[in-house]
Length: 176
Image (cartoon, rainbow, N blue to C red; front, top):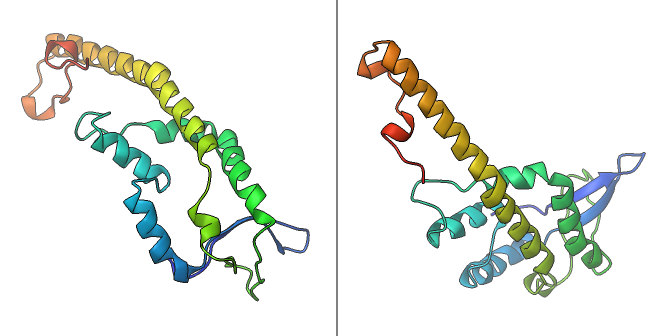
């Protein structure tokens, strides 16, 4: 939990902020976060991974690589967030601070409490789908080929177990 306000912005030619999103007041965060957590909603990418793991979408110990897809689609990700924050900006009053390094809304917390996450959910779904249909199969194929190559090398070259790679391909480990 942060002690200051947060904002996302661009800057004008004088270096002054042109905010695209302004956070709720730090004093309201405890109440807002407790409501968010009680609803089992999301706190950005960490909770995406947490929920997927908790619901056994991924095997124990595996981090589902949806963040890499989101990073690959960073312009779409930003546009999705701006589609949410843009309409809110006309309702947010924000007093500039002397340092212009932090700011927060003077509006009541309900502006942040109740919002439509349909576009964010659709974007996340598209990222999960691409991960499942494209990225994971490519990674599994890479690991299978790597393991097979290491296995073939190990058949020709004697190496002590302590320096052998732990993954030996389909002969010792099945990815599927």
